[in-house]
Image 1 (cartoon, rainbow, N blue to C red):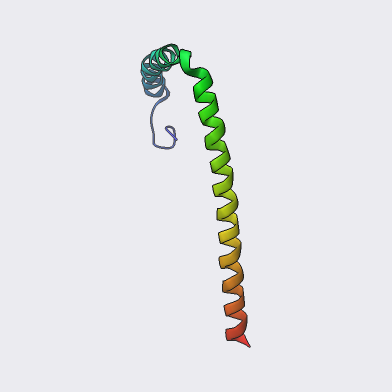
Image 2 (image 1 turned 90 degrees about the vertical axis):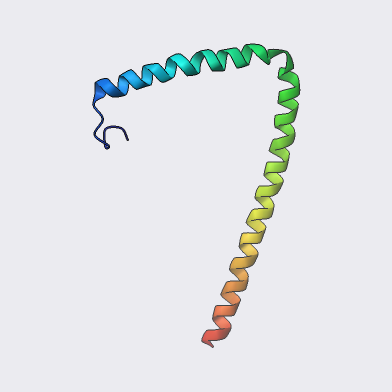
Length: 79
């Protein structure tokens, strides 16, 4: 994307390295700070995955129901 916008490779690498110098210490620091609660985070993620799966199934069911209703209405109008 940067090349498409006309950014030179040197400028891109400069900004990329600056971002790296900021993001790596931040992520490592957060990992170190919250390393004592890894088990709690894993349990929370498993719980969130469960609800995300339920929401996905419900969304697919709603989408299928709306699609079926629209098909039924279009067939009645055509016939």
